[in-house]
Image 1 (tube, rainbow, N blue to C red):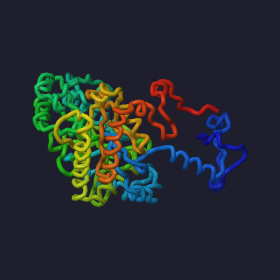
Image 2 (image 1 turned 180 degrees about the vertical axis):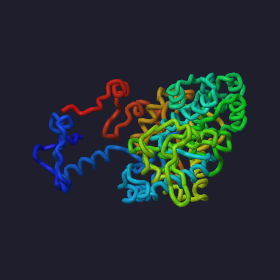
Image 3 (image 1 turned 135 degrees about the horizontal axis):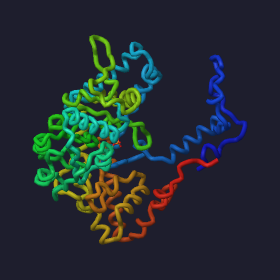
Image 4 (image 1 turned 30 degrees about the vertical axis):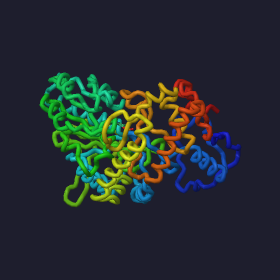
Length: 476
Ligand SMILES: *Cc1c(COP(=O)(O)O)cnc(C)c1O
């Protein structure tokens, strides 16, 4: 398709920008631009067609099934956007006097109270822009806690081998060394191995529960106790909260600090749609170090509080406020009954698909799963030459987004599926049928799978080329 610059015709314009109605100010010479601004010159209808074409070329939950494991691509109810677009939320400025935006501060305060209840945490900050930045903030709190106590020898963060890549990346950004602990054959943390590596140099543990392979850590209380007994703190990666929200709480499992991926669990757009929001919640012991702009209620009024030994700001102002409005809408809409019902349905849906597919595709782990499950296509690859990537390409031909591939990397030829609670049985049945057909074609005519996708605008691409030599800017 043509880029918007290629649709541009010199002199053609669009008159929807209102005329200047304030006094014109001459800028100092040093601020004025040296080159003409290159904006596309395009009529309204051509612009509208341009964006429609872009939308047609992309795929989201509004197009079809999107089982991207660990990412919780659930449907985002439209009422969330309606609330975020209310003028009193959408058209305020972060530097406005707080007496004029009390309602917005109340949104942050209410979201903190409700998310605190869901996670079992005492306080929360909404500054982090997404999960990965939440991790960074959380581990900075852990570091501030140890150092504040004069404990400088703790330089290690323990992370299971199935962890999301952002966990070890976070640890090293905060100058910690990552210690990997292997999982047992059943996918769970190996307690003996954990006891071997824990010590007085342990700053903390980073874990998600259910784990990145969709399994609940039954020994979670013992795990967090082992860390606490060694003087470390426990960090909960909240990306999998969709499996347990309203049922069990990270705070009760012994975690001291958690991040939430609001754009995953609490139904705000993501996957190119962003921005996200990765608030963190913490227990009382970490509250003195919280980032700036924590909302508190004093009498009838909402104010910002600066924590006593704050780590400072990790993002400007209050983070991505409009995303929090969407999440709060979702939580209030579902209510106390709807929240646990959503996670139970998510778990039921995953188990239904797992059960229907297990006679065709090998499951990486035994027994029921939580909200997602991992298949291993190693045997299929040996029998037919068809890989997890090939199956994913074939799925594209059937109007669905592929699952997460090759993650976690402890599983060979991994495909991780997370249908989420918002998919109907009819949709899942259609997808199950597609998976079975692909399995059969892989055995009967593997070349057809190797050639996929054939129904998409872009056919099979050279993945290496795309990753190594991406062209990301437009050259005039
Ligand atoms: C998505 C995810 C993250 C990172 O979160 P972002 O919001 O994408 O920055 C961290 N851990 C796990 C397990 C995830 O699935």
